[in-house]
Amino acid sequence: MNKFVELIPNQAARYGDREALRFRDYETQVWSSITWQGMQELVDRVALALLACGVEEQGRISVFTQNCPEILITHFGAFYNRAIPVPIYATSSKDEAAYIVNDAAVTVLFAGDQRQYDIARQLVHECPSLKQVVTLNPEVRHAPDDHSTLTWKQFLGLADGAGPEQVAVVEQRRQAGADTDIMYLIYTSGTTGVPKGVMLTHSNFNAAMWAHGERIAVDDATDVSLSFLPFSHIFELGWTMFCLTKGVRVAINYNPKEIQKAVREVRPSCMCSVPRFWEKVYTAVTDNLAAAKPVVRMLFKRAIAVGRTRNMKYVRAGRKVPAIIEKQYQYFDKKVFNRLRSAIGLENGRFFPTAGAMLSDNITEFLHSVGINIVIGYGLSETNASVCFYETTGWTLGTIGYPIPGVEVKIGENNEILVKGPTVMKGYYNKPDETAAVLEPDGWFHTGDCGEINERGELIMTERLKDLYKTSNGKYIAPQVLETMLGQDKFIEQVAIIGDGRKYVSALIVPDFNELKAYAQKKKIEFHSVEELVNNPTVHRMIEERIEGYQK
Image (cartoon, rainbow, N blue to C red; front, side):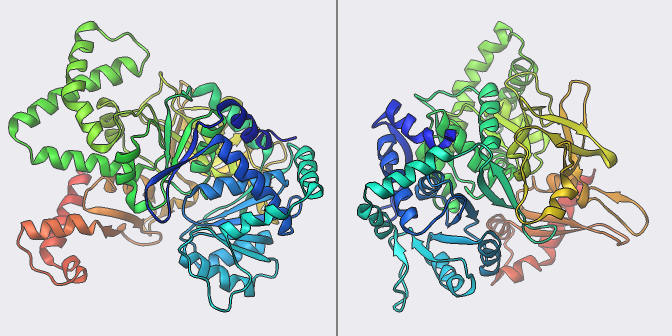
């Protein structure tokens, strides 16, 4: 029997009616809860309903929706049947979803909102394996000629017709599970070709849960994790599974655009995030500070200096903080930092795993100085998320920390980062050639990322190997470094550096239109559309001057 089919029953026995999941009700938008006991009952029903839908052992089911509790409940119901969940990003196009459904031979597809249902209806006619569609949001309107799609309530109702024989079949499947069974098929984004299904086994997840437990201490009585990154991404999915194994409450944010509101309402103690989230936090703080009175700016500058000394020089290094510095810090923490954290919704924050791209050292140091403990890490879908991340103390700014327990890292040809260990994937689904190209017979996985290991054993990531390119004059460019630097700017929402084979390097910039509009109003620049605004010569000069400033 696999550990993850025992997890929910064990936690229900231990915690009973204590909150397991928190979420916004689809109709009322009020935060509601599912207890551990309630979660177990739902998982039991989902397992029987999947059996009624004809799901077989190691068969594939897919969830195509924004984050919601039904994702996790459905996943565990699939585990009971030795079946394999195949997440699909909520924003995927019809063609992207169709590719995954066809490649994985998905038989049951859960659709979240109206857009995802409309796509699912098309997939029924284009994907031979797809037998059943289930809608999760009760507000989804089914097509008049659709007589096969089930609502979530109707789907759960399939379990009501199960008898002792069906219950016995599910239990037999639960008992028959092996560590070598595929637990998830996580499809990569396909930026370097068609998406590839990463096969992660139960043993991969067992190893990841153990390794994180060795390095991270959580409090099942007080910790609350807020999930806003998609469960279709291994970072959020893996972290949430860790929280569930440790009995940590998980609050699930449905609408990514409402994350700032959700943070203020939930007040999480931990939360996975990407650098862009922290870049926006940093920009908001610095903007408010720039508009503050001189005396406030002086106070904040002094507070940051004390926070940097205390948290970066002493706490980070595991050294005892001198009494005078600690006293000053406690004063500024009460008067300045806690108010700042409370305004964001992070006053209860203990640690915030951050990965997915580079975050500048400047912002990392700033956040730690004000008491926001972001934990920089590095990983891939193929390594079941984490390869390295900061330990509580002893980490070095500019690195991505030490390898997690049980995982080995070395630097190969062209400075490529190679990873080996029990968390490394089984391979790519239905793609033996692609698997052989990245996974050596002795277990070393080629990440495609460049890096180095410092004298302390910490990993430093420099660039993606495939992202490196050469201009026509022979100069190599590492675009991520430039993108990280420019991404700090409050006027820049997204940036992509281009220049392969060109005489010069260019940047494609998507501006932050809210900031740009505010700038235009301040400068009394008239415009009737965003197109007119971005083509305004004054705006062009302003952006160019800011970019030139980063090059100094």
